[in-house]
Image (tube, rainbow, N blue to C red; front, side, top):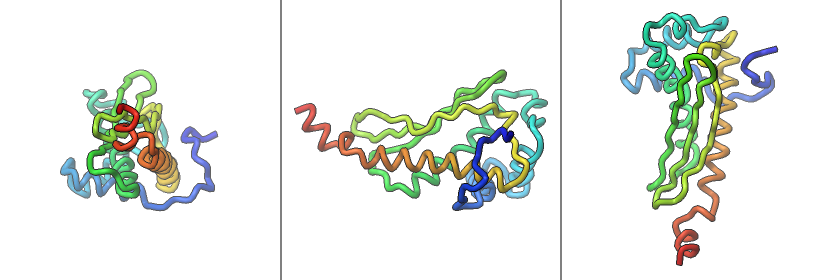
Length: 170
């Protein structure tokens, strides 16, 4: 049984490993050659991820690792779903050194409207390894679709529009 829980038949729209690599490079975190090596060593192979287990600063390493994985997925969803100018998305991390870390993606519509949780993903960072790039791409695609679908629903929900909220409070 696979640890990732990703259906083998799911369609992938992007080369997510390349997309994440490009995002890491564009953020200025590391040059391209280093990003390729970092992501390949951190994602492809057998669990556990030695890079995360053997680091002298595990909290920081796990936080960076999960941010580098999830932020590009959030960014991709926000490009594919038009957001109101006042809205924003944010990925929050609750890092655990002994169990599952939590990744929360939250939509803030702006105008003091209630925020919405789009994704709550529990992940044991050091076990987040994939046998090959294709399996990682399917895992990333699944999370991207969850975020995109939830975001599209949140943006389209008329109960959260500023006009509807004015009518409720009037």
